[in-house]
Image (cartoon, rainbow, N blue to C red; front, side, top):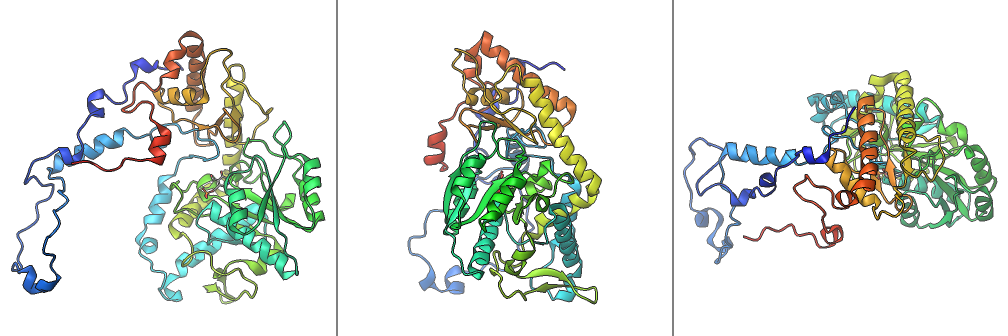
Length: 498
Ligand SMILES: Cc1ncc(COP(=O)(O)O)c(C=O)c1O
């Protein structure tokens, strides 16, 4: 497969880039709707509302755009073409798992029988959704090997908080207050943030040069003041830490709990069960593992599983199957940490996860993980001669590499921006280690797409040797080129001056 040189590709023409805003289009009186004539008499606002309630100096109307339907449709369609999306472009965004969201998931979640439910409906009316949630709960229990799962948390990060709250409750129930939580230095930022949110002190455990936990440092830090170790495995540099059972033994030896940030379960489905390697609590990220949509911080779902001894602390209500085969919400759990979310969780997202699991089945889930791992290792093998890999293979479902080009001053940002010209979304950058790109192809990409990515990366490495300026000034074919990213996030200008 050949890679199309960026100069021959035209994603957006300059004319489109300068296309006027809606406010600058149209004409007075133009409208995109034709409403029937009103058949109710016009009334005088002062007599209907009361003159005393009307402002004397009514503020000027904001001046909404006036535009015809066709121009309106074209405006938004044109804007949508400027977007990168997982439906149009490859998104190798490491640690974010931008996998395809199957349409069948959407269809199920949109079924009126689910979509029109109200959380205050009587229990007899909602047996179908309760049964579905109950089964989802049991699938996640089977996948993790843990005793019980709550579906309440609305994101991975909220799952972390729920898990740590249960760990705190567990220690308190034994008359202990353990102030410390350990996190490896490769941890996702949400892990130490969760510790702080839950009133614990986050302490960093060093990693070895191969990305695995430094067991000597772990032994030196874990003690009877430690509530838990929060570990991600496979971890954020893309390697599976085979020492995990030893890690669990060290942590448990001090009475602490092992929390698994299960964000990377996409590499383990049907291959390894966290309970079998000593995990006490874990969260799932349904968007990363079960193909539910990414929502920029939510609404998502972060179900949490616990081992037997933590079950009394699970949030309520819990969906249960009664002896007569009906389903119900159970509030009866004396040591529960309470409710962590309004009503019953993010039902629409959970439904999508349910459909994904049912559609793939147990063999299909294992196959998805095997493909995710194979795709990552295939790409790494194709790129190993042109880029620097700080951690040795094999990798799990993602890997970290560093663009290092001798004397050419080309950074990871330049490479990421140049990829846009090849129609590829930039990978995660500069995290979890400095100057890196983090690649996660997922299982849903074809061999042709993986090859296109590999060839684009190799072409960029060639460009750096022959014409580094092209890479340094990329992207060349987008409506906006290099933005002032700090100003864009610190001083966003989102106001249209009339
Ligand atoms: C390793 C890891 N931990 C935690 C999270 C946080 O999950 P969420 O974005 O669902 O809150 C993520 C997000 O992708 C992650 O990759």
